[in-house]
Image (cartoon, rainbow, N blue to C red; front, side, top):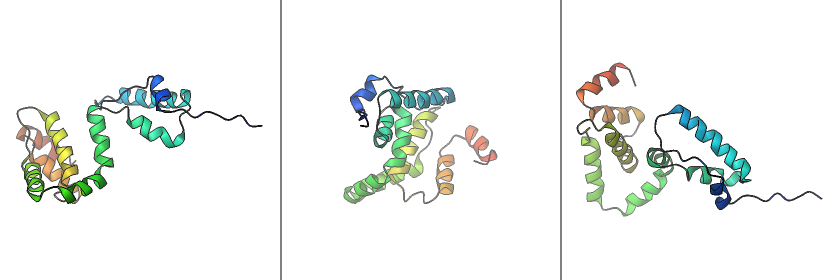
Length: 150
């Protein structure tokens, strides 16, 4: 008789102490997150169908915002059906007029990503998305971005 392998649940996954990834731009940290997450999957007998859900539960801060930007478009479209048109217009105006305040590029990027998800009709393609992003940058940065051909 073949032994039955017990599949791990979320509690077992977390008890194996996975790394939490916050999105800081450190390649070594990302590689360690992948390695640690695979190790935790193995130790907790994580079922294949649970891996994405469990792994994304370890994302925080910028990493979570980035992930949500790719998984939320359908939910955003549904929300926009019930959102007052005046609110949608306010967000679109904010998105199109968004600029870096002071030297706070991190806040600009985070808000830009949020508004790009919430206002998908403003930027129909990646070229337009880049144009709007570059438009909000200070001159000192804008020139470097344009010459590097993003």
